[in-house]
Image 1: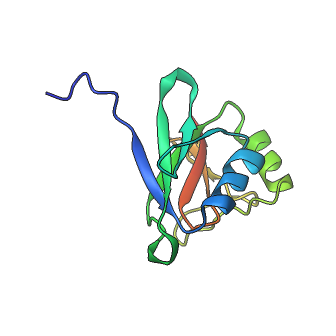
Image 2: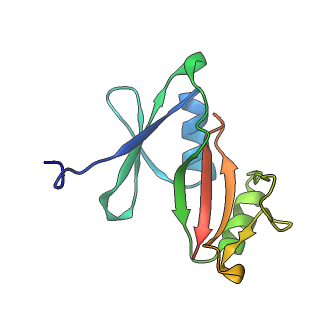
Image 3: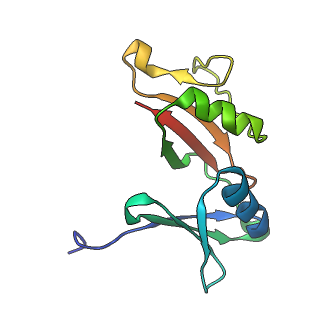
Length: 128
């Protein structure tokens, strides 16, 4: 029934302008202002995601809302850190000084590092 649907995902933010600046200027994503007052992220391959304003009703997601596969996680983390991004540290997860969990070396998944947007939603960069 939905196998041919061009599905997309969305998440809320508490400040649309702060989200616009972060996703466009810090992360370098291509954004489109949706006529319904939302931000649309356009990704290679035709995928897209929306961010919609919820103001004071916003509650940050407790899970990763966007994962960004990258070729060089160290260079990406260094570049984002230089732009002011702070990487999360999770108790019970071994992460190096950059905040990267090195899963490849231990055969436990990709190398991955998590950070949040201005609304507290969790994002990641990962390299497999």
